[in-house]
Image 1 (cartoon, rainbow, N blue to C red):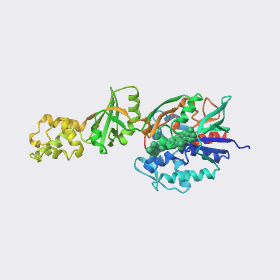
Image 2 (cartoon, rainbow, N blue to C red; image 1 turned 180 degrees about the vertical axis):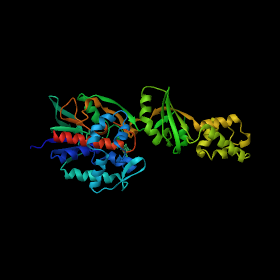
Image 3 (cartoon, rainbow, N blue to C red; image 1 turned 135 degrees about the vertical axis):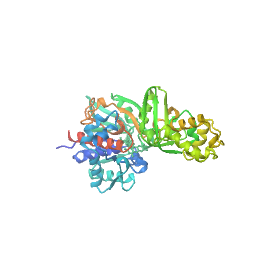
Length: 414
Ligand SMILES: Cc1cc2nc3c(=O)[nH]c(=O)nc-3n(C[C@H](O)[C@H](O)[C@H](O)COP(=O)(O)OP(=O)(O)OC[C@H]3O[C@@H](n4cnc5c(N)ncnc54)[C@H](O)[C@@H]3O)c2cc1C
């Protein structure tokens, strides 16, 4: 059998896995990467620890991809979380499962993941072309014939797998330029928006509160009658707004609302474990036990110091008032604020700061069983450049590895 020449562009997790799989099928594989290293963004992932995947079961996994879960079913059936974990374990890397079933290498270092991928690329005889950039694609009779790189040099191929990533953290190499090329050759690109992104607020309290993390709170984003309710967790003040797991998880939908010019606000419940009445009763008990104590001192048991001054200002309570001098209205206002502190969302941070990109190559134009373009023969897509994005927790990397595996297998075996 004559070997097929397969070019893979982009040495992120999707492209590396595609090249490894196609190489393992005995094909002649070239991996083209404009950086001089492998997996630049992968190295940053999980704060340098790499949250490789999530150990939850398939249906729960798919729920984390609200817009593209069904599309991914075939890729996940082919190569899912246990397969990915085995891939690394069989090559000598131990993994551990942390809270919410997040999977990490025991080394707590993303370099361990990249090292194994590198070894495997070499083992499968994949030729790696660093510092070469895709600039165009040669298509004849609706079929891929090759790619143009750097200053116009043509590299012929039988199959082309694109894995150029999304459009955030552009210093890692994922600038969205691959998507512009794909648009030029006739594919629909769903509008790019930031995903897993901090949000800015109209109020400037976040500036004063910069760096403060609120733990065990819950939030609710609202627009008109629509609501997005979080679980209990952490929120971080960024200086211009809010971030942290609760915000990032719900941010994709909020970005969607903002892109439709909707007015959005967030309500923060600082005491989700207590009802309004229970919280009020607790405050009353403290007042009775310490009638001469300053209210500000009592508030310390309920709020971080940095927040107390803001809350006293918002409720017009004199910070030097004693507990037994507080009016019922002042107490009610304070409890209401603890249960429902509202901030107006002015915008999201720019796409550059998103942990993932929403949008990309339209799923309507990709065959989910093969990852091949429905428009151009011999062209395959994988990873974040397709219109797939999920919550934090290892879901995005698994999608990149699974779609990469499927694209590599399809291109390598047809
Ligand atoms: C800070 C951060 C932390 C993250 N942590 C996690 C995590 O812990 N778990 C998780 O599941 N997800 C995480 N993600 C998301 C995850 O990293 C991405 O979804 C994943 O890297 C996408 O893989 P990919 O292979 O599709 O694209 P990328 O990793 O973006 O790789 C694309 C590659 O293509 C190359 N390229 C682009 N254009 C060209 C061109 N014209 N020519 C040649 N090469 C080109 C780029 O240089 C790049 O190397 C994180 C993201 C960020 C930003």
